[in-house]
Image (cartoon, rainbow, N blue to C red; front, side, top):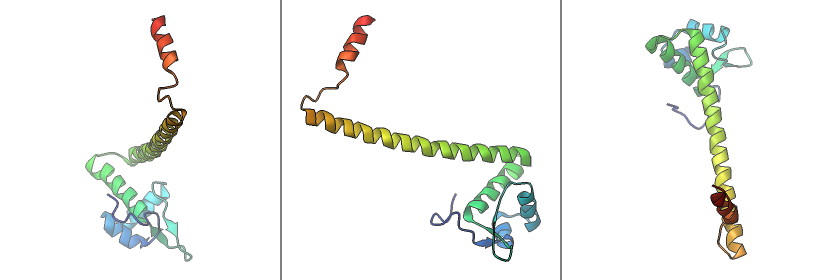
Length: 131
């Protein structure tokens, strides 16, 4: 749903523009900030500046409230869960990449040893005979 993938966290929209993009009143955005649902950046003159990530977060809140009938406390919990899922997906991807890297390194080691057989064949045979 991200429209600008280059700088999603770059603060660039004043409150009136962000409110129009989301379809909410500026006062609603101020309230969401007051209760901690969104934290826009501030310019030197203390003007609120919203990033695309902030706008996406506001759209999610609007969807939870308007379309799903969730109250703001529920929306906050859902947003925290979404953030946690995103974090865990990143960790899974990093771990998958590490497993792939280690398997490739293990294959190189096996091929350089010349036997081409897995190192733990004897362990597998011993486990099979114990059953």
